[in-house]
Length: 222
Image 1 (tube, rainbow, N blue to C red):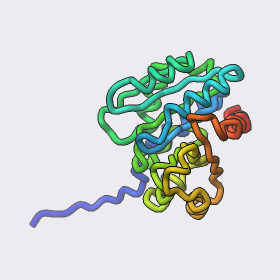
Image 2 (image 1 turned 180 degrees about the horizontal axis):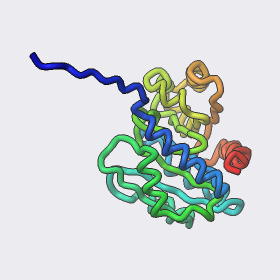
Image 3 (image 1 turned 30 degrees about the horizontal axis):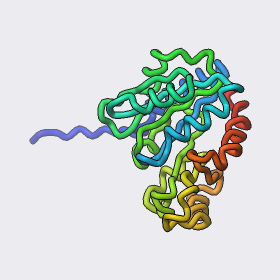
C-alpha cells in the first residue's frame, strides 16, 4: 500500500505579493512619490476622472500614469494627449487583475524617480483588483451613478479595501434610480473609514475636494 505524505502550507497565498508590494512602497517613500491605485468597473469614468484631476494638479506636481488593459493603448493615449504627461501602457496578458510583481516589472521600464505623484489606472473590474495589493499608498475606487446604488452590496471587498470612493456622474442623477444617501450608507456600513465624494468628471463638480484630498495625502509618501 502506498504512503501518503502530508505537508502544511500555512503561509498566505498572497504573501509573496505582499512582500513585493511593501518593497514598492518603500521605493516610492524613498523617492517621495505618492502612489495611488485607481479602480472601478468598466465605463465608470476612470480615464475621464484621471484627465480632469491631472489637469487640475499638473501645475503643482510632477505626475505620471500607468494604465492597465488586456489589449489596446487607447486609455493611455487619451490621458497623454489630453494632459501632456508621460504615460505607460501595461498589457496584463488577459488577466482580470494586476498584482505587485507586474507593477514592479512595469516600474523597471518607467522612470518614476522624478515624479511627485504616480497613478495606476487599474483594469476595469470590481472583483480581482480588490484582492491584490499593488504597492500603492492609497486605493481610490469609482462607483458611477448608472451602475446603481446597490454595488456595495454586490462587491463588498472593493468598498472595504478602498480609502476613497468617488460617486461619479452625479450630473446624471435626474435620469437614473440612484439614491445617493443610500449608497453612502452602504459604503460606510462596509468601511466606516472610507471617504465618499460625489463628483462629475464631465462637469468637474466635486473635483476641488478630490484635488484637496490628493494634496493632503502627499506627505504620506515623504
